[in-house]
Amino acid sequence: MCIGINALAVKGDDRVYRDEVNSGHGDLIEERGLRDDDLFHRSFVRLEARPLGSLTSLDVKDWEIAVEEDGTLPAWFEEERDIWKDRLMGDVLDIVKGIIRTGRFDGSLELGGTQVKDLGQLSQLAGIWI
Image (tube, rainbow, N blue to C red):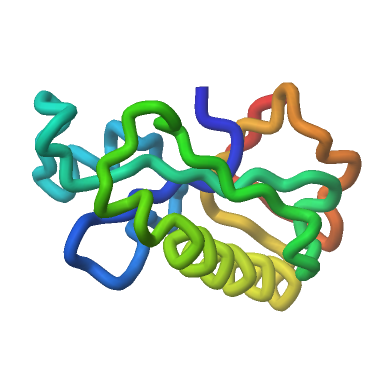
């Protein structure tokens, strides 16, 4: 079950892939035409940014970047794990700045089982599951 902001690290690219409505990993994989049937030759890794307290915190310590596939990670990702985490954290901070500016998040989040205690400056959310 995805809990936070879903993203993909794709081999040979320099950015993480996500969408504005925070689709699940399966949707992101399908939208990009990626193959998920050969673990050995996989060209992507599932990532997730999880809030640890407030949904609108700009402090990187208030976010966890989780790798959804520990134990089956391709070498290309292992070599650049920290770089990919930094890239996703940059996207997360941009999302949070947008939330602070507009007061809304147009995507969906699964917050069940998280440590989120408040929604910060969020006044409108398209979809939330607790």
